[in-house]
Length: 171
Image 1: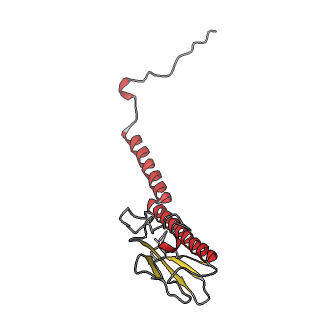
Image 2: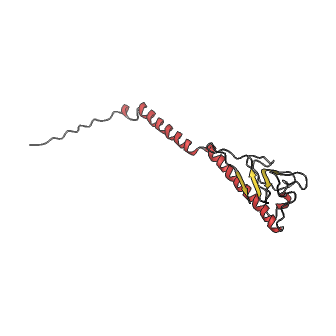
Image 3: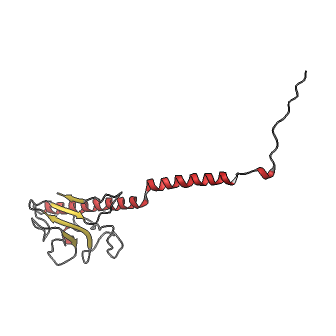
C-alpha cells in the first residue's frame, strides 16, 4: 500500500497579508498605557524640583562652610555685622556692615563665588553664581542664635510629591 501525502496548507492570497485594524488598535492602546505608566513613574516636574532642592542644600552648605572658615581664621569672630542673637537676614548686597552683606568677607578667600537660589535671577540667569559683590542677591538667609550657632536657610524650597522640605544647615 502506498501512502499519499496531501498538503493541507492553503496559499495566502496577497490581499490577506498584514495586520487587521483591530490588531493595530490593540497594540497602540497597550503602548499608550505603558507610556502613561512610565511618565507617572518618572514625573519630570518632581525630578526638576528635587534637583533644585538638592542645589539649594549644596549651596547653603557652601555658604555655611565659608562662614565657618572665616570664623576659624579670625579667632572665632564672625563677618562684620553678624552678631550673636541676629535674626534671619537675607544674604544680599546692602550697606557696609549689613549682617547679610557677607560677600566681601568670604569671597574669594573662602568661596570662589557665592551660590544663588535656582529661582533667583541675578542678571546672569537663574541660579547663576555670584562673582561680584557690587550688587547681588543669593536668595538665602543667615541667622546667628544666642549660642553663636550660624544657620543658613533656603527660603523657597519646592514641593516634591506634596512635601515641601525645610532646607537649612546649622553649625
